[in-house]
Image 1 (cartoon, one colour):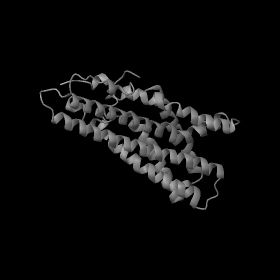
Image 2 (cartoon, rainbow, N blue to C red; image 1 turned 120 degrees about the horizontal axis):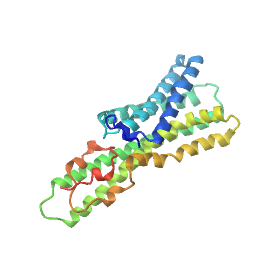
Image 3 (spheres, rainbow, N blue to C red; image 1 turned 135 degrees about the vertical axis):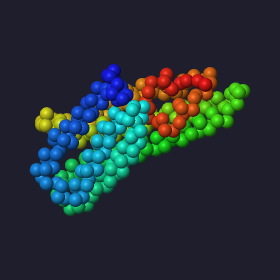
Image 4 (cartoon, rainbow, N blue to C red; image 1 turned 30 degrees about the vertical axis):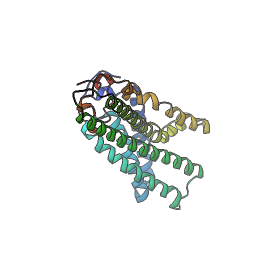
Length: 265
């Protein structure tokens, strides 16, 4: 990652983030806006609203993959995520209507492809939302254990805490990977397909499939730039309980290296 700070944003600017963001900006502003204006799509209210939702969820992903909660601007992470979540569901619903129910003359191949992409988008959103809810619940449970501790060590309590911490870190990893899938694959696939079609017009189906598969392969390394190491909490120092600040639910998504969280009392 790049070393400059920018309120903590610099650590989130990886090669993967730059690629996904360049693709996003190119698709939304350089490629799609002229097409929308030329075809006057803004006159079709359901379609225009669908496009507004699609723009919002894609840009929300761009912002939140940069503005994680550990940064100076992290207090906005949850709000942006909620806006993107609502926009994503609305965009899918209106997109489904425009594609299948509006009576518009739509290519069958496009209907199927765009619907599969929409389902992938919704699935990523739901999985990511459920994961962060699970993460915040585990944070509260760990805090409850901490508040009930005494000076004497209890092996059962230590074991329960270790289990909760492991589940917390797993939930965080699931959330991050789902949101990266949403940004890079679900939102990025239409953009990548357009780009491949322009750069390699004779690629055909192979190019389309390759574009989606290629983006899918970025998810794991992209997510790991935030997580640093997978499942690191399972190996947390068992010599003592964590400080309260490392288990609070509002610290979710900090994605910092493990040694910044594994402090002891």
